[in-house]
Length: 154
Image 1 (cartoon, rainbow, N blue to C red):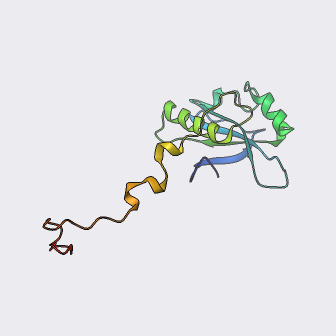
Image 2 (cartoon, rainbow, N blue to C red):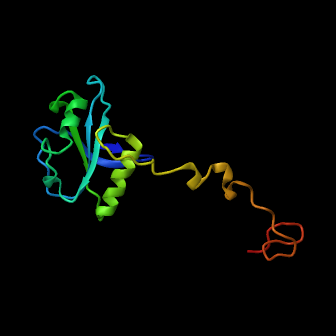
């Protein structure tokens, strides 16, 4: 298992050696990976795609972008694949995951470019959140407290 994506990420199956791998006829998001430094266990993402049927994608090496993968990795035997079957996820969900990963990793063999999924202005900073300040004391005479601000009977 390898985790790809921001925060906790998505739990992809793999990575598996792409050469000799037989794609199953399942809908999935997939990532083509290689190790920039073969001495380390770190992978680089060179392609992210999604499919309704992995067996129809031309994998492992009849895919239209496979020459780019081989060039990036230096050999077709240096390529790996990781797959994510999205339980209950339809085509739109798989596409959204693929676009998020493309935005995050900017794989060289993908020609599409997407912005990272989250922007700071969408969620704001922690200092902007109204819930970070202490709660004000209850107003005198309110049902939540008496005149001295102490909590009233529950």
